[in-house]
Each structure stands twice: as C-alpha cells, then as structure tokens.
Image (cartoon, rainbow, N blue to C red):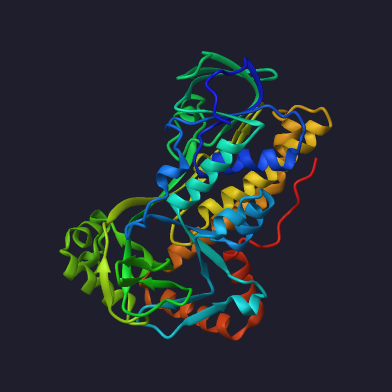
Length: 433
C-alpha cells in the first residue's frame, strides 16, 4: 500500500524502489506470510499507476534478461503468473566467435526446462511490481521520498527522510538498493573496487527479416561481445517486425590499439553513423543467421566497468543490487544475481523475525554473506573472465577460446555447467542461521 503517513519505527527500511528493491520487498511479504514484519519502501521516483503504462508496445522498449532461476524466485514471490503473460522465452542460445570455427549451442530441451531464460520489457516488469506493491496490505510504500542521512545506532540506524510525513525514522535494518552510484554508500564511506574495461555498450532494439524462434545470440568480436536477445514481435497495423534487443560492446576511442584496427568500431564512431550505415556495420559483425537486419531503433551508450563494494554489510545495514555489485551487461547476470541475493536475505530475515532476532544483527547479515559470497564470486568471475577473454584478438587466445567452444559443444558436462551458470542454477550454499 502507498502511504505518506509513516510510523516512527520499522523493522526494515528499503532505500530504492526499482527492480531490486521492489522485488525484495515483495519477497519479504510473501515469505513472512501473516507475521507482523514492519517494512517501509522509499523511492525517489513518484509512484506510478500501472494502468497508465499499459499502452501499445514501443519498438524501442528497453528490456531485461531473466534467468530460469529468476523465474523460480518470482514464482515464489507470487509474481510469475502476471509476468509470464508478456515475456519472450529464450529456447536456445547460440555462442560463436566471429571469423573463427568455435561455436556451441545450448538448448532448453537438453536442460529439461521450458526455457533457458526470458526477456521482459522493463515497462512490463515495472508495471507488475508496481501493481503488487499497490495491492500489498503489509508493505508501506512512500514515494517520492528518499533517505538523506544515515546515523548508525547500536540496534539499527536513525534515518533522516526527505519527502515524507516524518523527518526521522528508526529502523532495525536499512537495505541500500539505490543503484550503482549510491549516494548513501558514499556518505557512509563504503568504498568500491572498480575495473574499467575501456569499452562502452551500445544498446538498441533491432528488427530482422526472419523470426528468431526464441534464439538468443552471444557473438564474440575483436572489440568485445555482442548479444542479441529475442523480443516479442512489434506490430504496427498489418506490419509485423521480428525484434531483438542488441547489446554491442565497442571500444572507447582512447582504447584503440596501436595499429588502429579497432578504430572502425569505436563507440563514438558507430554511435554517430546514419541508420543505414549502422545497420551495415552491425550486419557485418553479427552475420546473417536471422537474415537481413531491417531496422535499428534509438541507440544509447553506456560506459562499462565492473564495480564491487568493499563492504556489503555493517551492523544494521546491507547492500543489494548495483549498490553491491555492477556487472558487464552482455552476460545478463546482474539483475539475476541481485534477485538471488534478495531471496537469500529475505529468507534469513523471516527466519530471524520468527525467532525474535533483529534483522539487522551481524548474525543474520553474516549468514547472508556466507550463503551468497560463493555465488557472487563465481558469477562476477564468470562475467569478467568471459568479457576479457572474448574481447582480446591475440591469436593464441583466439585459438584457445575457439577450442574451448568446440570442446564444450562436444562435451555434455562442460556444456551443462555453462548452461546452469547462464540459467542461474549453479550449485550454491543454502542461506541458514
């Protein structure tokens, strides 16, 4: 429920009502059942009426990849039936290295699942979360409102709030889910470890002559990985366009190699091309597996880096989502890892609450970190190694990775491990107190 008339004290305050913060709040509500867990969600953006976002699909709608594991989490939160009505299933993933022989294919049937993952338009995902938050009888949502200052206490934190009926609110646990450039993390002196890739991601939607039939593509080039995710067809009158979501990794202009071989594919140059020339350049890099590329939508550029917070927990404080770790987007692991973190933390908080223990105690937060640190380390390493290995044009590395792709295609155990990692189903520890 939305409410600007707040209480002076909560068990949990979530700073940030985006995909991670909203999903975490709804997981808490579902797992807690009818227990009296007092949860406040603060979001700097105004509350949206889901009905206002239910218009016709936009060709340029941005999207997010959800793994099979994330589907299971949303099922547990009771959200999947609403989400499933408007997602595109990833039935197969084709992995290849441009100009080389190595390739492998992952099939949902071989993994015994309906889909390896799904692509959800951000507008639809946000609409489902907003509706569930509005319908909630236990959660309190206040927006637009934000935490301006955090004063750590021995039993939680005292928060200074902007935009709410109360200026001061005490919480037993503050969950920071306010994004990769968290002002609250900076205020608290939580440092980050950052690795710049010297690359930028060009994001846009594209259309093909042929139907993707649920295939996703990971294509590795000398400037970096290129991914195309399947999207629902876009219809305008009688016209039907087969859409895909493109994430094209390009070199920064100041990261061009000595011979200038990457200059042709620098981010700034590709971004500035007219549509027809852009499509030609993309066609050359992606190939013709889906026929001719017939349209490219609005383009955006994002600098790429790996950012990991040096601290994820303090007494009464925990970080979730991009506040804790921001990954390269091509592997599609960022939100999915954050949802696994959110599920583990929510389960531990509910267990602690039923045992009359504070959700902000170090016992609870250390149990969360012990449960998720392995998953985080493996997922971050998987994303980072994939990015660096497949962004290098040295002949020895190119030969090695192509042999690796070929062997993976011939060895079911190796392919199964890769598929489980991509699906968010790799072996990991259970969260226990």
